[in-house]
View 1: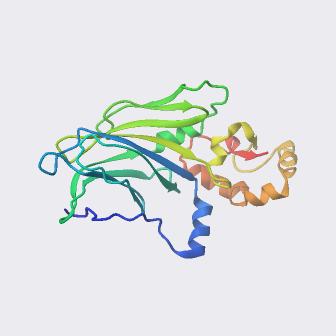
View 2: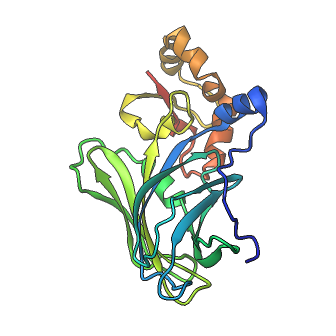
View 3: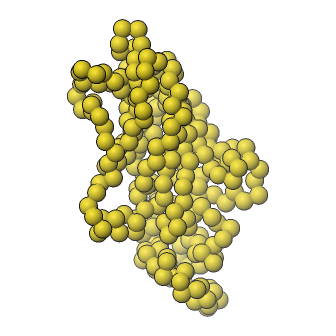
Length: 254
């Protein structure tokens, strides 16, 4: 069946120490995708299917376990992707596992993580658990089966998504997104706004007060955030996110 894999392998784009260093410099954080369940999936065997899911983003590819003879499977399985581009699409494909032939495709769907990344930028301090931060509506431009809510749960921002599968007669997949911050990752600049120091100015640090505050940062902290706190790096960082925020909203760790 075309590019359907017999046994998909996890891929992180290998390449040794140099690649790992480059990845860490551009890494925004980790996206944990909880594959919750499939609903009314297509029948590909006599009366049922043996479904599993492959998730791809850029060069990364991960898969769930196979669930035997079930068109309403419950995986409740976490797959974790490294995010370097917040505008990258995530593709999810459902397959029916076959022992003696190529695995049959049971539909696919794509989703955009940009609304979720935008929600991570918000200052949500003081809001109660259960607060709906944002909503994404289903449309012809996405694969949403229903409205998707981005919610604050126990201090964490999660997005609940129900995807309608394409290129198949029926089927939906329910997932949940959760973000994992990494020490030194760029996205930490936007997810912990209450712990950061603001630096004003569109293309430079002009205020003497701000310069003094900036210079008082511990040397160890400056060293840790070198790829981020230099102004050219910040300008590039803001543009990559296509953020409406200017440099005066870029935040530094105290």
